[in-house]
Length: 145
Image 1 (tube, rainbow, N blue to C red):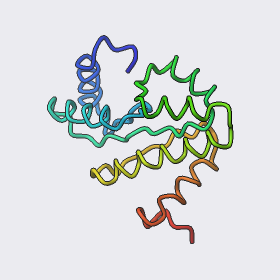
Image 2 (image 1 turned 135 degrees about the vertical axis):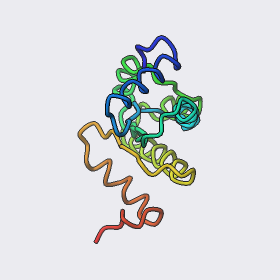
Image 3 (image 1 turned 60 degrees about the vertical axis):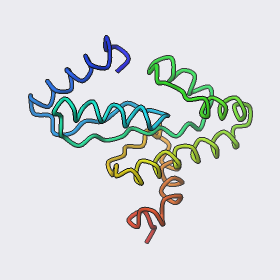
């Protein structure tokens, strides 16, 4: 959390919430799965065993991402920054690249045993539908009937 003094303070806050009855946690958006995995390991080391929902945001608009990044202070890996730099001035390409990046993140999470994933679509259900289609063979329940 960007307002936490450090990651261990954040872990302490999560532990307090779980002890108070929270039965699952949802992360803020992240663009580097290693950040999520490290956080999950810290939670488990602290004895926090509730399910953790991974927060993935498909970036379909570079300007919107600039604003969101200022608010969230999320770490942006080089690969993601390169994507923004390359496609920021082509909205269709940015959308396609952002959905592909998010899909790759989700595939990596699933392959690593993470089954609880929240997609921050910013009120764009068509983005979720495209990701659902991308995952239709990976997650059979994503297939359209």
